[in-house]
Amino acid sequence: MFASADVYRNLLHKKVSIRQGGKVVAHAETVVVRDPEFRVQHGKVARIRRVGQREVCAYVRGTATAQGALAASDLPEGAVRVCFNPFEDDAFRLADGTPVQAADLFIMTSPCGSWVVGPR
Image (cartoon, rainbow, N blue to C red):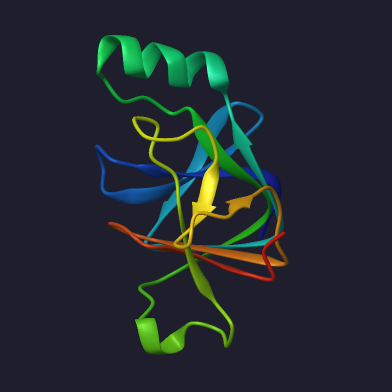
């Protein structure tokens, strides 16, 4: 378990990265984050749009637990898709377009797929 960790999708390694104190401390197939806060660095988003090259500009902060692969059937009841695309938006959003700033639980799988339970 990683307390106060930042979790983001690592597109180069096709894993989920876990960062603490500014340093990547682990990679995993699946990471579950309790009491997540969704963070977007707007200056980096602007640079991505200007330059057209991706970089880490958004992450989820909370208490993270690394796990192995997770099947869609293993998702908790009530889990809904959430995504972030720096070329299209400035916030994490549910599939219906609702912005998300926090939730009860966040799940990110590799190479893609993110879900929340209890978004707000």
